Picture 1 (cartoon, rainbow, N blue to C red):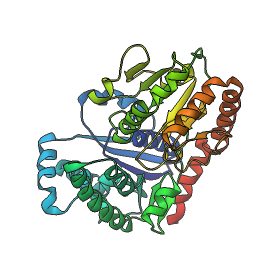
Picture 2: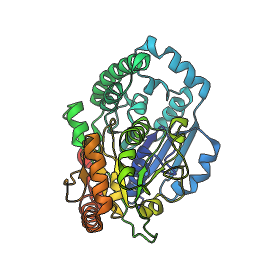
Picture 3: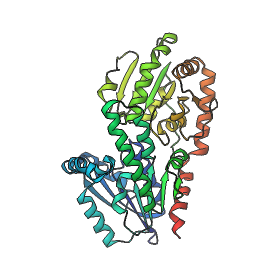
Picture 4: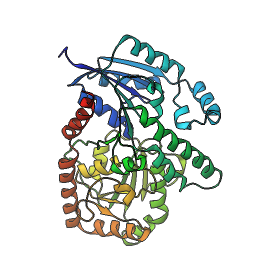
Length: 389
């Protein structure tokens, strides 16, 4: 081991393994990529004891790991008083006196060359620390919240509107406390509008499919505990799926991803719609599908579901929000449709056209290999880390 390596500290709100959520995927791979260049320390919250059974997956890359279980009573209290602090609920939810104490103890005994905070909600822990600091926002939470407001109604719309205002003010203020902040897309960078924002896109592993393709099988993948994913599935099922079945009655929709709520589970009929929840291998599920969809109506950033589908050569039909800042070209390596009618039509067209599926899929796979390799991502991070020198 190179004893001359510099020291890098990661701070996280969520235990990064298994990487089921986008921020976990980004953090885990960030740690993995940087372990060959830096001595890595990680301080992270966790919620359930069984999460720590995966410590061995991180010990490979980290010299030191400190874990603090989130105190739910403290969380509820912080959220209760957050309106009096004019603090976003997203920040209040992850406030922890014990976490702050343990972090202060760590920073008091060791000098880190770089401190890398993952997610806006954890930024306050080091906002007044003088070290060279990086903040991974991943997406602009303010943009995400503003789009969610548009999809709510009644009292929930008012609550999210207020939270949206708080998050926007907080986000634009906190980035000034860091040397650099990182987002995954230019859309998010332009929304925050700060010169210290850097764009580092998302890397994706390339996979070869061994599973047999199934006929007329549409897949939607993603963390189903995430509102934009729930909203996208509801939009598609309520507005598009019946039209598709009129032309292709044997079409199946498979929704894959952990934590589907009851409003999503109710769609499961065991015939045309299957709500699978968590699966051991997302790659196998994608490889069995005929096409993937990303009919996003809210959210921000870069859709990992789209990149993962493209990486296995699976054609994707997406809204413009689903494509986001992915530079894939419509009708070349992705299909874009924003209206109900157009989305249904493009799904029907590509389900009916094997040659089109093959062309779009192969182009999609080439696009991922050329634009989202982990080596490219690593060099982008290193450039930011070394900008202090």
